[in-house]
Image (cartoon, rainbow, N blue to C red; front, top):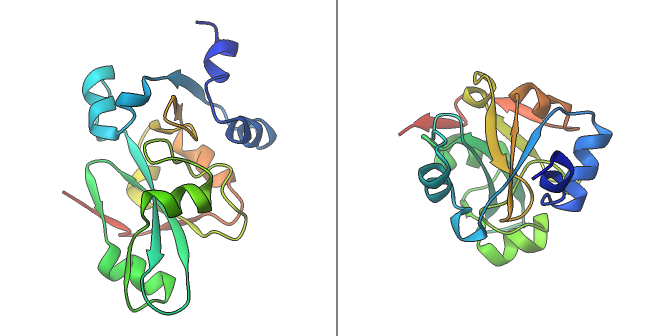
Length: 168
């Protein structure tokens, strides 16, 4: 498969943002049935230490608030402390698949921090930035992106957060 064909597997808005922000990346086509991180890593030979998950969190009481968080697959998002405090909510949880699709336009297993709504906070755990390269969702369950984490810094409004996640 040529690079053009491989890039065609990306969510069109994600491909557009990557091009506009001039972020170097490699697109990888994947079987949608294997898009979840553990399945993808096992089947395609990638390490959880270089795999990043983009997770949507949501308030569960009071004003409706959301944030996108990017953490390595070998880490656990600190939902109850760091994320809750940053979002300014008493209670939060992971957004359900329907809300994730509604807010991001992407399905679980393909969510990426690229092409998210402009008003959605995007927080990256500092451990992600320490990797040489990461692999994360391509905006759909048919693709993944491989890129240097410095490319994430081009996302407008992005914030790198210390201890957003903790190693498992």
